[in-house]
Image (cartoon, rainbow, N blue to C red; front, side):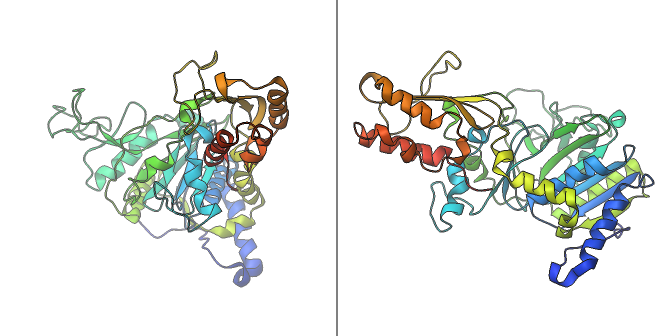
Length: 425
């Protein structure tokens, strides 16, 4: 990859940068909006997921409508949920928040320490980011957008690095075929949807997903991004973070994640970044406006505001589509399910929430799952219209039920604290 040209914005400490710090960010913001810059390519040197996703959104909103943009970045360990997903359903919040509550606390399964939770602005499912994968984004005019176009770009980049098992599947993801060579018969040269290892046999080993896809489409722009697993050291831990203990009890509107077997490609981040940039230039022209981006872009007002929004509880949890939590089958969700761990089968809890705010709540405890009407009404009044993500201690929420059913309520409160209580973003 040739040296980056154009404005190079590197991370410098504010104390050393002074006015030059803000000036370089302002110059960059002006330049990216210049209609003459029809092809732009950037690499972020920040590992902050809130900042990188805010830069991405800024590029979507601020670059010229006819321009095509490549943005490459790496995030520190973080769970990224889709725009229309439910964090209580998608994420093990107890494991995620353990390090925030007590950094030295041992968890089962063992955690990674501090891991961010971010709701991105595009659709799609939940993914785990760390320093072993590179995230790629292409922004282009809607007229030139297809869901496969830039996934195919990534496949060509991988094949150029010797990864001949890479292809685009029917879900527009990049996968590595795992069948024996020759399983696919004759494959046309340049076919990015089949390899010599592709098999149509349902009993053949399943391909490994190495890069998913998510999209955001506006009237003037189309965004396609994915994350490419190269050398993540956390593949054995990731499933624990993406398995919520509340899943059996939640019926949600919005988008569910689709689980797929995943694997590392075994490439260095820099090699992949250079190969993708080279392929992007081959597609869109070498006369690109390039740059390295750093944390000084927080000086750009819209990027700073976007970063603060992504960090807010109202965005992360308050954007959750309507869902119900129920410990028992009901008219809206008749699935069989286990009882809440450690509690009696007669303990029944029901919560309906929209945008993280409780709309309905019912609790019955004890013999035959009954509570007197006054107790039941008091419970609903304590929860109704409250933000579910602001509840910090369920023992306090359940306090009036403790007199008669102290042990049962303690167990229920402990489970809810580990499952529902959110950490600060």
